[in-house]
Amino acid sequence: MARHETQRTTVLVADDHPLYREAVVRAVRARPEFHLVGVAGDGREALDAIRADRPDVAVLDVEMPSLRGIDIVEALRRDGAPTRVVLLSAHLESDTVYEAVAGGVAAYLSKAAAGDRICETIAAVARGEVILPAEVQAGLASEIRLRSEPGRPTLSPREQEVLGLIAEGLTAPAVGRELHLSTATVKSHLKTLYEKLGVSDRAAAVAEAMRRGLLE
Image 1: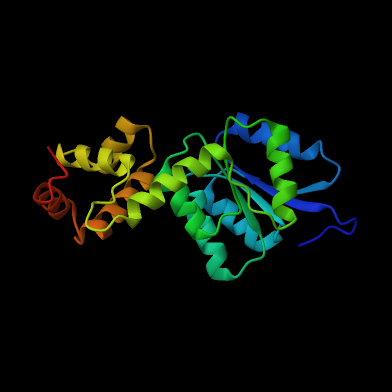
Image 2: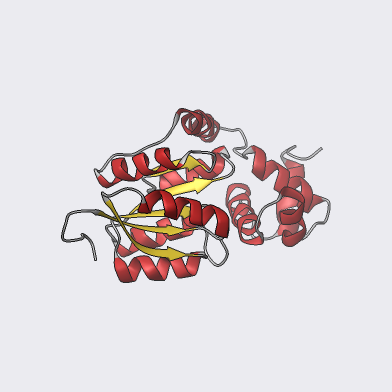
């Protein structure tokens, strides 16, 4: 359903943390202009529900089991789906924000945002607006500058951390535990690292990074 008969904005909420998810759900349900059409606890469930219900706006956690919020944004873009996405993240890392914006996200908020702010963002996104708060814009601008400087490595601080840990011999799950990230997120960072360094595996990435002076 794309629109409820009373012209309320249809909304889906997905987050793998039950307490946080319920807080967002309560905030959405408290607004008469919204109609909650779905709730999901992981990325695959969220994508399936969006494809089935076609909500106007999906509010997604950046990090979820099965599929990340950013992966869902990319899948919806490939589908040509009308649903617009608000991403919520506990961390405002510049490379993740850049990836999200490049993928077509409509809004990116910190999980510290109050329920009212999340709801105001949902309403704005439903009107066709793009919402990137000042704290997100700063990191995005920094990432754009990094990526635009010719001849310089474009590794983000998080990618640099991942690179350093794999150089120490840590596996993706071990890197995730060290940095408090999901294994899927670490693998995503590794994929980006391989692309930036022009390699196809961990050993080659470490060797190329050493050659370029990216590792001490």
